[in-house]
Image 1 (cartoon, helix red, strand yellow):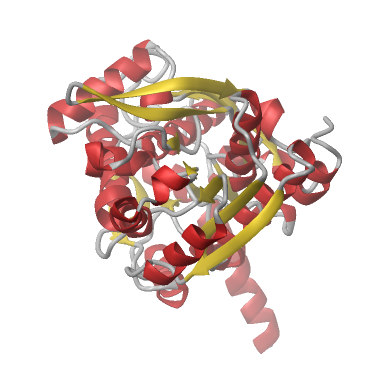
Image 2: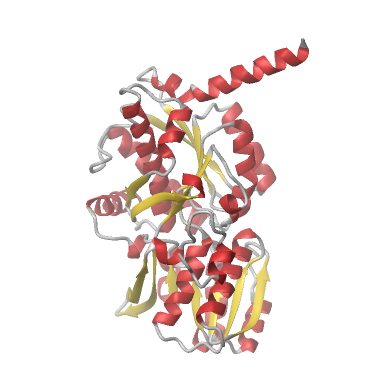
Length: 428
């Protein structure tokens, strides 16, 4: 009897989760509740988490007003207002799992959008499946999410670290950079490990005669980089790659530039764009900067991008960085999926399963251009990217030698692991 009751309880809970969207949409004054998770404290907050939060707050308000350009002019999600509950990503994976469960069980959110840290995404993905809650990763880059797992409830609306690493190596080749030796400095967890593995793999294919001089793996947000900078200087590498983000990338620039690191080697910062706003002229000329996709200064001209930049700058007095773009991209992806599901449901509010079905393999347009869920069985985004070199001219920051790469150039085909694709010399 007890077993039958527990099965009945589970069935009722599952049905309630499936109907949560429709239930909230039933009343005009009952908004769709969305948990948003990003860094609000700690060294990752200022250059990364806060710009993502700001984009979420902006879109929450402007979507509810119906103030976006087409095709996003409908108020709310299909006419139903949305309400974000924004929480802090700081505190580590155990804390994030606890907080996720609280968002679902105690706060009663209809879905979750979040996570900058790859470690957090790896921890949250199986919990989202367990709790049967639609969860959208907007930023984290480790390819392991969908290469090592298959999920119904988890989506990622941004590209993986493979894109950044492969495009960086291709950029060096296309710019005719002389590379006899190369080195790396990365964070010693999933994001940094995967970024370095993909970069070294790509370099072996593109620069087969080049030698790896040294690899420096440091704790996340360690703050002090004297010893690894000394090792990099001693290596005499022609090129130094770093996927550092947050306080780490700022620290590397502020501590490495005075010691001549950026003069001795060509430094490639695959996730360096947020530091441009923060540090400006303190980033040495010639540094190669990535924005983890076609975002910020690399975003294409469009009505949506113009609206987004103007609205963001008017409200926050600074331009949006790539975290802002990626948060907006995720929110607009969910809005597109919801309204597609609603249309297929005869104009009635869709349930969670209908939204998930509409989301799979979806293509939509964000401020950074077109994005398609064409990998990970329709749950993983593929997108192009760009790299350029920073140049300071009369007090202004410019980007020169900008080169763009299509999604097909820098993304493994569906069902192929990054490591295997790179070893195949990027065969599509």
